[in-house]
Length: 110
Image (cartoon, rainbow, N blue to C red; front, top):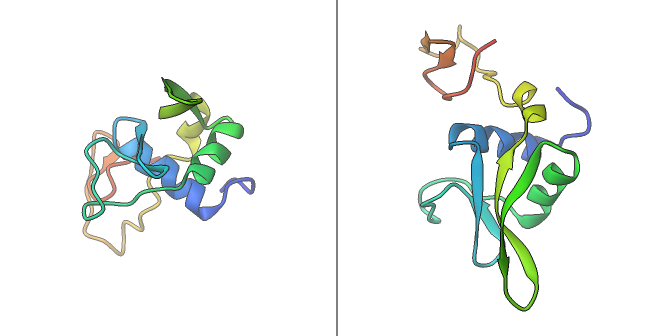
């Protein structure tokens, strides 16, 4: 994979790809899919999202004005397409590939 991305960053990119290529910011600086709660899926810290944006794999798309201006939504860039692909072991899992998408992880299979 890409040496400049940590496993946590790769996980965040794949999570975004499974969820409409976006992530939104929740109070406390947590980033997750729209409709997230602490009991239904992963979340990522602001520093992880900032690192992905700084490296060009995502970009901030919506900002909020408060005491300061801060991002509240981000989306994947085209550069993330090579990272956000299925890496499931198809021999190990009962997995189908339908229209090029893995049925287990919901990411494109190459």
